[in-house]
Amino acid sequence: MKVRGTLEFRDLEGGFWQLKAEDGKRYTLLGRIDAKSGASVEVEGLLDESGFGIGMAGPQLKVSKLKKL
Image: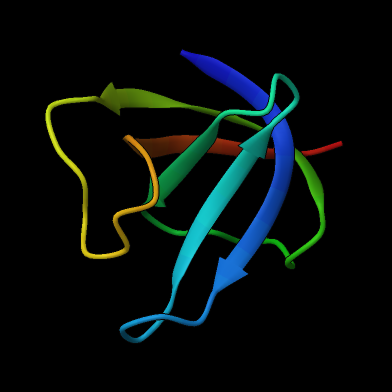
């Protein structure tokens, strides 16, 4: 799946990356994030809606590609 939105870094339990999508949904991002908080990006990856990670902040999106917009 591909999702566009804004990157946010959450400083909770060691920190995690989250994507606030253009439609208002939030996804916890798993994988290497090579961008700064606040950046507009397009993320491509696999969605895992079966559970929540340690941040309890939305479904997990396993990032395979991240493109800065």
